[in-house]
Image 1 (tube, one colour):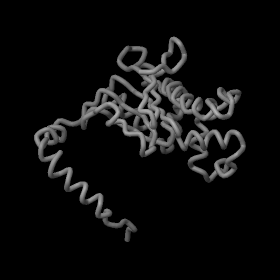
Image 2 (image 1 turned 90 degrees about the vertical axis):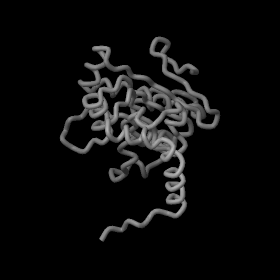
Image 3 (image 1 turned 135 degrees about the horizontal axis):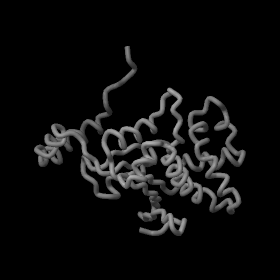
Image 4 (image 1 turned 90 degrees about the horizontal axis):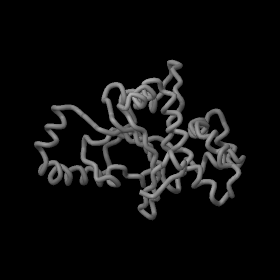
Length: 215
């Protein structure tokens, strides 16, 4: 027997509220989405952090974004080893099956995963060094980024590492042959963003200037 439980009452109430309002007012649109399949123009790779709400930031409707969320919005390098790769599978599906025109990597302020990586790499989180730590082994992806910001004053290092996470993910995306080919054929563009949760700010990576600039 499974250990699953029934939904908490507050979530059930919210569902019924949505069904009676947003769904009822747009029933034809939802049915069209269901029947015609999804045709998103962009894939967004963002953090699992509950404070990062991609669709709200861009005012997106259902069917507009193909969204993948993981700890610290990281993309691992292309590793076709026959093992389980959730993020890589999502990238593959977005590019090869859906044919998205854009992939957006969205980092954010006060990221717990990034802070964990910083603490681990600076020797202050031995528990993340354990081979049994899923978070620690995932954050190993960002070690090259930490090495690039290790010289920065410690009070500024975590925020710099948040932006390095975006850059590392963009670099790793280009190790996927099908991503590289699509970019070179002008069928796909990659974008790096960072949002300040508290201030509502948004910055984008400018590859020419090699800095993040305010949108």
